[in-house]
Length: 431
Image 1: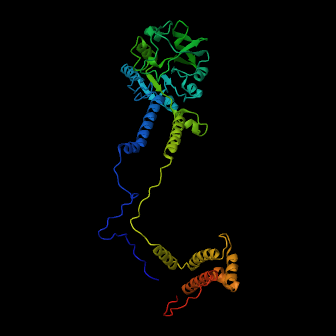
Image 2 (image 1 turned 45 degrees about the vertical axis):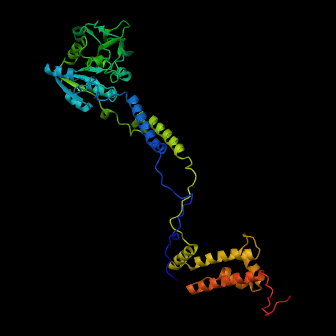
Image 3 (image 1 turned 135 degrees about the vertical axis):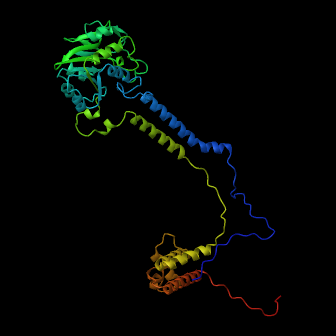
């Protein structure tokens, strides 16, 4: 075997111009239109990001920095830090807690327990465990289920519509005289004021013209129970209106200890692991649908045809013989003699079928029979050359190659008519 021939570059003769074919590749600067087209995907992504941000603002209502509603440490409009500080200044021990166990421990003696549970984390049994022992319960904005548990004679009646006078003989309400239970624009997204209708023994205070009360005093398991329909009476943004501050300080400051209880997720009853729907925020599904639509649109947009193929001249010219020699060296290096023999036989069978006038779909056996009849030799010998012989050494492979070449030569000679003999020169010309 010989060493591989080096790749030769195409050269031009001295004094001749280089090849300048019209289809030669040329480097050109991108136009403004091409630059703009390349920037389109980034512009689309920026627009999608802006749309998602706007969607998030719409879903969350733009609430930023509001803090925890009615938290005594929250100085935001929805917090109640102002009321808590004034109560502490008056000698009331304000104890913020977030779990039922901590609330029971903090309210061991007679105390006032404020409960604000907009997420409905506290079960009905929690209210019963906090009642009794001379405690006063103040439940802010209770829901339907809570009212059914702690005050069945009281029902929800809708939102308040304006400032209302006390209209009852409850001392805390009489001192306040007049309150404004409506929420302010700064807190209406976190507090939902409400009113009550009383059908039993409860005392309704701050009742409007429609008979709806903003404060109800009743009893629950030997405890005095206040139902406050509007958290805006306690918030930093609403406590300074009319008699809101007086009502808040007199109701919450009745005892020397005030347990400020905001139930958390830890107070929920354990009923098994939550499902994915319970853990997924409500905005996830619309955002996922939006992303799917964007993905499909981008796939359709970017999946179009890329345009016609561009013909580019190769930098070098490689001869077909070098490719053949390189493949032969690969076969030799991997000792793939049978694969090399098959390659030789495939080419020989195709050429022999053409010589014998057989179609390209003819089998090897049919080609062997036709060639044997054509050159008038033994069919077994032709079949051995075209199909049966297995070379085990390089010498066997070379011998098989020679036999294939000899077989093609004999078949070609058999179908080529003999040329007529020609006379040699005689030294004279016939006239």
